[in-house]
Image 1 (cartoon, rainbow, N blue to C red):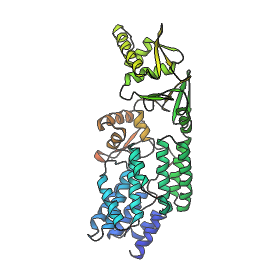
Image 2 (image 1 turned 30 degrees about the vertical axis):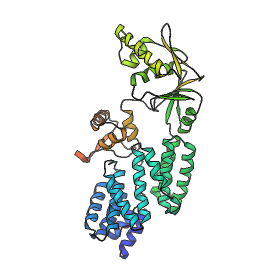
Image 3 (image 1 turned 45 degrees about the vertical axis):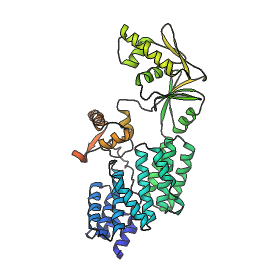
Image 4 (image 1 turned 90 degrees about the vertical axis):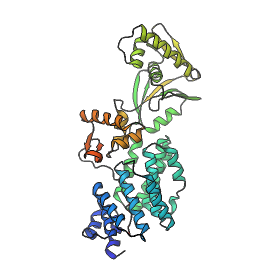
Length: 406
């Protein structure tokens, strides 16, 4: 690596993409192309960054396997930032193996963190935990220690362990201060806000209030009978019953939970479960069948009793019934929840993260776009979706620690 290339790499590592470009912007040799690609990624031009990194990867000779592997890792990070979750994971795994074989443990660790972050985005928490267990952050530079703690916090948040998340974020903040990279510090601050943002609503005895994540954790640890509309389960201190595959039964259980300790009229239950405004005899007969099924499913947790007006819930062990719902409930709320991170998502990536078809996601995006809730960027296969930006605020930067190339 010559003197200018080394200086550009140091500038990128310090979070100064403009300083790096000043040194290599007019050069077309492979190391300069790779550094230019990383600089453009930090500046937000991900399309040009990807093209530059691919040119660099092709330009490196057969004896420069490590440099090519670093280009692949950088391209994988750009794919993660642009929410291209279908990017070939095998290519990243092969690049990581090459880096490990040649003793480049820092960039190999960076590749592993990209894999873990992808697992988090698509909800594969167990795989993320297994991959993270192989990494020792103590021997890594401050920037990667920050990434490690952010991943630990992300797993803890998804596991509803807010104490662990706060401790990990505190460590991430200290590591980001040591790294002296503003984008990393901003990333940590954004992650900390998650713990202070409403994460759910509690509905109990006719009242409705917002809960932070630590309050959700406390509710789930309580002795209440909980109808959890976030996970579509019903639970008490001794048992959890999933109704994720039985939407009619869950709709009935939620209606009963919201009305507790009172009952719910049959006409209301028909409307909630079947979407009918008129409860004729056929719907009433169907309601009796579904109530029988619900009574059987919940028999270990509660009894479903018929009343003069309708039905009521009677928990067996708990003395309180609550409903836990999302902070905002509207049509296509799950799609909006993913777009709320401020990043641009492809419809295929949203389908992968939500576990549904791309066509279903596309219909939801079209409806949200017609309402002005989301907006598309780009055309064809390059089209991405995002929520409209708030004036005066920038989006998060997920490329805080560029990789030196050469």
